[in-house]
Length: 297
Image 1 (cartoon, rainbow, N blue to C red):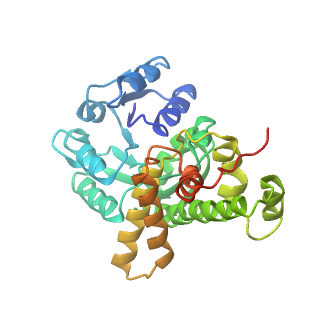
Image 2 (tube, helix red, strand yellow):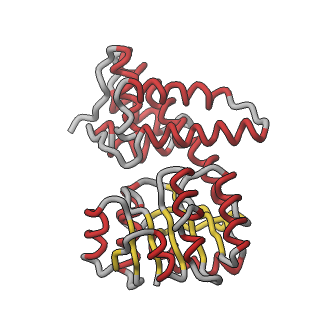
Image 3 (cartoon, rainbow, N blue to C red):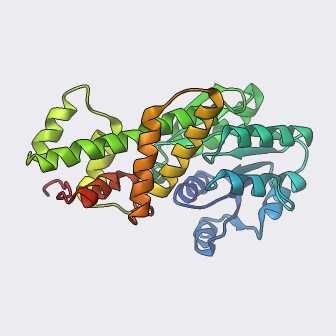
């Protein structure tokens, strides 16, 4: 039996794909509707993390932040207190490296395996079973979780020992999130200068200025008028904060990170926090009184 705790915008489709591919799941989430959706796919509902841990050989967590992960995994009544020795925890959340290291050490003391496997790509990729995973694990534990990862995604990278996945995710998200601010400023300027959006994008797509957000994600989200969240500005701000803390600890100066984080803080203050992180361009245009860029239908 596989346990799955955290059925949010990313976790729900990932768990659903496992059910559809024949894995037997026991699930838990604070949202009853999400649990009911998984029950319709033959998953078993559990009342709490303790019940999930007691019934599962591998327990997957996909949770919003470091504090929640610590509580669910290592808190009283959590996974480690109730899982059997020889079981394994795979945390797929985006958390601080310190959180991953602490939980891996606590799991090791109890004879429980630990894998960090944060997720790349977007919620729409999770829907289609096309997620990318950055995995930190021993060779034996990686082999053990690989069938699950193959059931949820299409691209799997074993980045190294425990903690490597989390650290790789911070590097990845720094570029992915910061590029949204760069794109927002570039397209805001383009709008102010009166340029044609379609022709401007055509030029950018043909040069080294292009990036994955601008070419792949944005045409299907904010530029199409869809700013409902696949990944929110609030979560992007959280990830930039994690990157900032890691950079300070490692003594790596990152001035562009500091500027981008403040831009996301401004967007949150202006009420855009729950919108998709591609909506950074709308936040900037709203601030500057610029017409929001939209592709012609």
